[in-house]
Length: 234
Ligand code: FPP
Image (cartoon, rainbow, N blue to C red; front, side, top):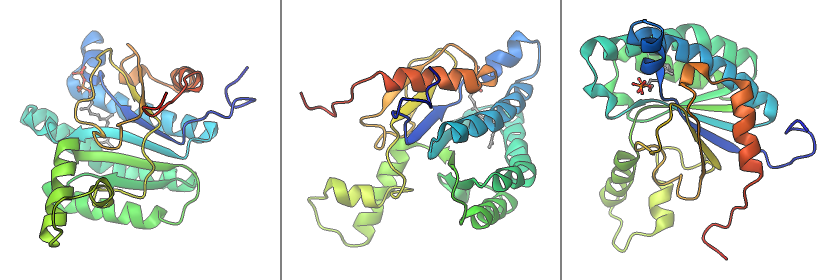
């Protein structure tokens, strides 16, 4: 039975750690950036599929705080793709009624990128289809440290509460991810949604990110729909 018929357990929020771009490229004898470029194409298809399945929030780990340690050539290539995304892909998302947001420390990016981010968020703000959250220069530990520092700067007295910290995360209005998918065959969180993912279900696949599509997304949602979530209770 297709998952969107009869099963109501569609995750509200799916997060994806898009891993394996470079290994995919290497397998094909291509440079790393060709893998990231293919990853960007995969991203478009997966957003469409998630929207069709009725997923309300899709968050994507596109660039971590640690990714600056890659070679200057690769970092520059990724920045080029980011610019291309803002220039060419946002319009397509807008036409589909998607709302796009960027989460992470934007001050590390050049002015053109920051301006493109602001324009994309502004343009799609009123859209009611899927919410696409692109995490760039994002790190879960940094997010928590930033939240605590904001509370301290505002004169909050200890003991700080969970609710107080949560209220200062980068996007406190977005529901916690129900399901986090990691492609590329590794079994780790890599600093993605550390706070928000406390009770997320995980799904791991060997598929490299450029190979991941609607069929794989359906398998991940199917696996999720069979799980019983207890949030620490009996
Ligand atoms: C991880 O694969 C992927 C990344 C670090 C970049 C992800 C970027 C995209 C999917 C496209 C860019 C999109 C935007 C919006 C900027 P990896 O390079 O770690 O692959 P590996 O594990 O095979 O080395």
